Image 1 (cartoon, rainbow, N blue to C red):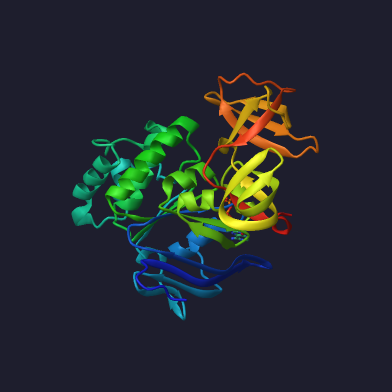
Image 2: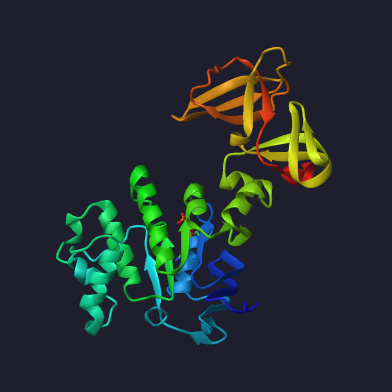
Length: 348
Ligand code: ATP
């Protein structure tokens, strides 16, 4: 279906390689200035989708519309160089034989090149690096040059395919925050592909969760985290325990106590319980229901796995200073904002 006012829309796109159907009737719409995170497991078709938008692949069926013009489908076809779509790849793919100015100015018309290169390098916080060769730059700096190269020609849409995966964890966090601020300031419309849930939630105004060639849920980062569409999404976007309970309106009763629900429900359910919403009370005067099976120290906090007498497990994220050890008897207490429940049969 055409989507009014979208800067980019992918409408009913199908794409197969041989007998493998990679995208099945795929729809996506993006507004100007919006940043969409596309999150999905390896092989679900994320890169193929970006390649289709960029014009590096052609759809078998359906349309890709960019700024009101069909660039693929319905007999239309625009070459990649005519689409004004920028792309930042996983390996950054800088031209090793060109200096920074040569890389960043690559797609910019000659007359504007010098000014545009220096402006864009200022933007990515690499001023006066025009003469440096890529192999003399750190990983984080090379990544910023790749970003500068993609945005210097002023693309309508910027596509980023796992752009931070070559950076170490600390640098990755730093660079992604910078990139988000930069894209927001410049009001750049972007699709950002990742299989890292933390990155997807941190970077996107909106997150589309993808599996096996389809979008299974789309929403704000907090929506997909707090109101997952199904148990698979719940587990894919964050740590979760699917815990059996009996729903009665806005509350589900589990063996350890009550869990407030986002939406009223009745009967046998499984509640998506996030570990940060579970406190563990040590066995005092109250009856403990669970035994600590495992404890993983993670610095500021610890991930604790507890199980009831039937072996049903629940995870809790507790402060790293709380003294808990395997074998302790504890009472879990739900302490977070209301949770999402699924009918027991859905949760198989
Ligand atoms: P990852 O996160 O691992 O990069 P992805 O979600 O980006 O994965 P794609 O690269 O889009 O997934 O690949 C989706 C499927 O299509 C995979 O099974 C892949 O092997 C297949 N595929 C992609 N390109 C081709 C091609 N040119 N020829 C044949 N099969 C392909």
